[in-house]
Image (cartoon, rainbow, N blue to C red; front, side, top):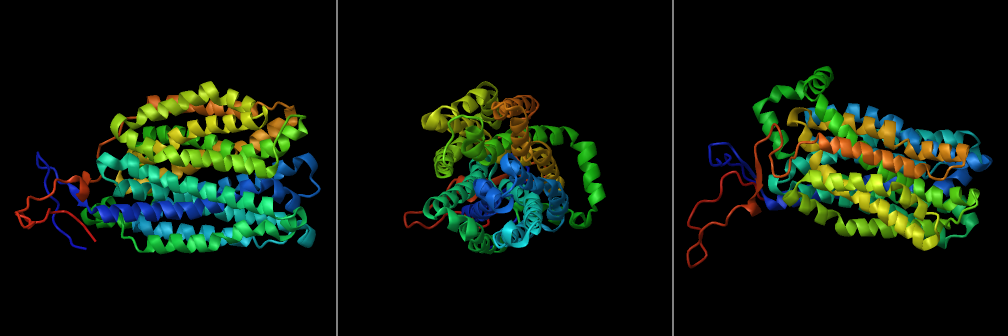
Length: 481
């Protein structure tokens, strides 16, 4: 790998050029690490009905609420994880912190799969589940926003939407893999074996996935934007947390609010679809005399919707590089306002209606998933990007989105009203509309605090003679491996 002075753009502004191979390797490291991270984080919800029987066997209709409450406990720790990992990533670099988050998530998930049942060790079992979920939440507090930061800072300005969407491709793949593995275990194993030991298998698979994620990230150097920052101002590596928080509070208050609103709309939709709807279909509807679905069927429907989202997420990311981020985000927000309640009504109309309702929610979700990874990092400059994203993302998710499954389950159980998921989706859409109205378009523009970034593949090829020999020296600023 060679270093050269950056070339100059027309008008004299410095420009950074990154090798195409390096860009793709960085995107793969972030995306595959995300597969491992969100497989680990998501399988709990897909196995929630089974886990309620293992750890809350005598809770009756409130077993689902307690199980989802343990799920929500992870979100108590996410702001703390963001507060720890985010500013740390702004001081020592993105890739080192992201390697640590994968290690922590994989360890907590494997340990969760080894916890004895309540019948074996009594009340200590659900307490240990709670502890492992909190460790997962602490890891998640630094993981996703770090991956957002790394991909955005590696991506060429004109293709940031495309590269950012690959990060969500990894997230959706992790959720899909978790749903598929859970569905297979539930479908194949007899009920007694499933409760005795089968539920542990998906959790133990976290170990090899985590090893792959760690390996890829440790082989990657830090982002162009972070390297530029450290070259200009090495003293920022010692910037205290208090100073970083002061910069965010004083200079980037609007960015924090806009980012928080987009995160709320995006993640309420996400957690309603992936974490509450499985419980809604398999137990809540039956308890209220409606037509629900078997656990295997519900999980299979989730896999179908995730695969459909995987098929379009990168195309939407590419589209946002041409038409902008705001139109796609606004489309998803308005669709939630208009379609949130009808989607939930469809979930009560048998198998075909359930598929239709899930696809409708998934269509809203993919508008955010494809575009938010390239939108949110552009709201903050390099010196506080990781920390700013980590704080606003995790506080917003913890207060409003991660708690949504538990609040919806409790409200539905207490009132008997099955429309509560729809109310949440509509509210999320309203928040999204307001946030997008105040969002500044960032498509095609350099990130704040960094030189404009171009991929070597986007530059014109050198002129060659008839024998294929370049007639001009190699492009300066290019970094190839």
